[in-house]
Length: 129
Image (cartoon, rainbow, N blue to C red; front, side):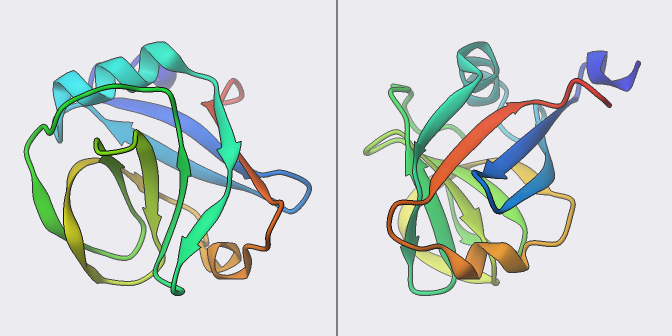
């Protein structure tokens, strides 16, 4: 079963009641941060959006910066240590804040541009993989 891969953790990002996206956390991007997040799963929080380029939800995870970056590509997943947010990029973006790259969304991300007030993100291990 590929789920036990040392380098990738297959997850589902669910926008509750709307869509489920396949994604992967990649240990080689930020081993420490990916380890902390994977041990904290499942995670859930209110969905937020910054313009139409970054969607995120806040978590209780407390981790410093790991392999900092400000440039992200469409589909990237990053961790913002300032408030424990997991961020999803729907466009190539230069972030005003330094974040830790942690993975990639591997399915269609169009739904991320349609987030409404009250939407909830859930992030959990893909048990079907």
